[in-house]
Amino acid sequence: MNIKITKFALRHFDKNFIGTKILSTTPIEFEKWINKHYNEYNVNIIDGYAPFCKILITENITDAKIGSMNITLENYQYLRSGYLSRTENELPVFTRWFELPIPAPKSNYLMIVLYDRKQLLEEFETNKKDGDIFELEEDVDYGIVAILGKNGNLEEPMKPETMIRNALGIEEGGSGVKLDREKYLKSVEYWSNNATIR
Figure 1 (cartoon, rainbow, N blue to C red):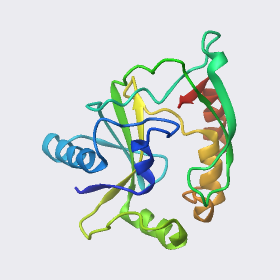
Figure 2 (cartoon, rainbow, N blue to C red):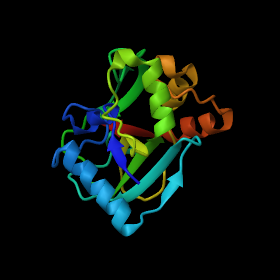
Figure 3 (cartoon, one colour):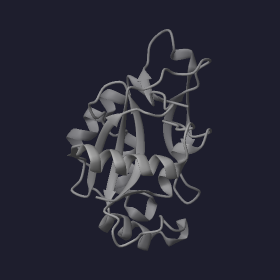
Figure 4 (tube, rainbow, N blue to C red):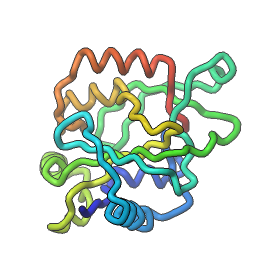
């Protein structure tokens, strides 16, 4: 299997990104490590939220910190909110995040979200204004679209705003997957008590 970092996932290597940041290595070196790790150690990939989505969970060998944490009385004062977009062409959506006075702890695991080649090509054809996804060689099987720092090796629910954006369609920066009411309510329950870390 050949895995490539998408242009969208390069945000994880930006120090100003809200969420999991990787600043101890370059995207190219990280990509090489993921491919080597997957192909040499036969890492399992689990099913994601849609048929085109897979999740690779691996130990964290970078400086990535945990990407989210539980909201408590002690950290509530550091919680911020606002309308943000992930790219200049997306509609801003409401989200919350922590701005902590000290660095978050290093995560034990990285949850790497992958989209298959067919989905990436479909999204690229719809949103050419966003520029090239990556150099899509014929042997690329999956593209990395998100990297999440986690202390546990279990998948956390997708954020409600991400589910809504996906349901809005590829034209608005989503994946085109219809909103699942039950999963959405479970997501709301989880993210009412948790927030990402900036």
